[in-house]
Length: 278
Length: 248
Picture 1 (tube, rainbow over the protein chains, first blue to last red):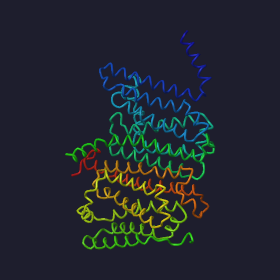
Picture 2 (cartoon, chains in turn green, cyan):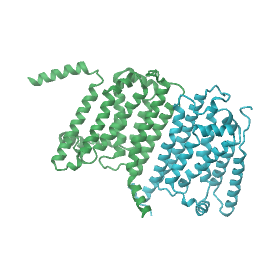
Picture 3 (spheres, rainbow over the protein chains, first blue to last red):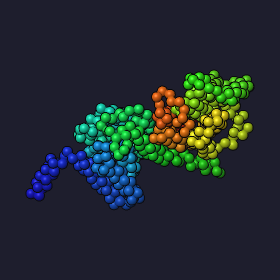
Picture 4 (cartoon, one colour):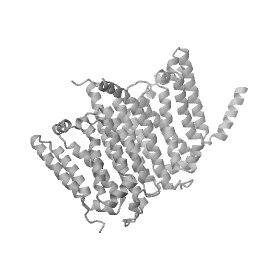
């Protein structure tokens, strides 16, 4: 009885709220948080609290937090109606910073524990799923998808179309997140699959920065506003807003990719400096 | 004076000729490969031609945009070409004469200091008003440019430290170009009172100058970063860290 009541309520809620752009991100975030928490609990029960410490919880919460902040917070309204720079910031949070933080949090055994065994086992056994994931995580494929996503969604026609149609907008955000997860999985290598060497990961980060820089330059160096949807707001002209959005992208990439490269190369700096001082 | 008339800074013509003579003398003892000689010549030509051509006249009397183009050429591109023109034996000779004491951790702040100080408004306006002050500005830019590329071309930086050096330089120097792009008022009073060309207001001129400077630096630094990434990958291939068998 209660099961039927619950299903009916769920169906009613879905019918009334499915067009609310805030529902899907909250549902996904709740599922992700639950999966992460059960992974932490399972790993701790096995006596490996050292691999599921508070630092990991904080990183995952931060990643989830910035993603939610970008999709359901005031930034979303600002991005949808007022400022291109806010929209750029939103994309960077859901496609770059959010996935990066969550993947860093999942390094090691936590990644394996993320999915409960009854879910993980059939996926792991399914050759087709493995083949698709293997193909998507090939460095050239992942980078190609990421770069194509970056280029395609910044075509003014598509950018404005996404703003006009919520379903397309949701799909756009899904693309950002998926592509972000792919490249950051290669950069962080949470499962130690060693698809790329340290040099390869640095090269990927440099290629991502270079590709992002092309878009930054187009936005900053353009003489006219490229996106008719935005007319400027809060005393900021449409052109200045566009230039700020390019700057936002450059700064965010420098921070995320720069930190990643610095952490990757740190072991190579330390021995040299010790040798030099010896 | 007509905008497209030639302007001259003969000091740099003389210095370029002196550098060419010294290079020719050194090349007789240690013949460089053709590409190195061409690179050295191109670097000297860029310095001499930027400062002794209509570009000089446009930069000194009309457009900040042209002045920043001139500075980007003589501070970034030309010094790199000149440094690439040196053969290993020429570099060793320079090391014996004191260049060996130069350390990248000191060079970087000195380069940034030179880059920013030569562009602060009082100095820039003074240099433009006196005319001969431009010689000092350009000499500083060329000197710090040569200094900056020295650790890169000598190969003394490991790929990891080279990447850190270039990334720090790229980020550290970017603020100047960005300030030009985003400022809503002109920084240099000198350019507010010069005849306007091409319908550009002083602010637009400055913004375009910033765009040019930023674009040029992005290109040069990303190419240099790409070179060090390739070296990093080569290093891994040699050590076998990339999964291939180590080369002897």
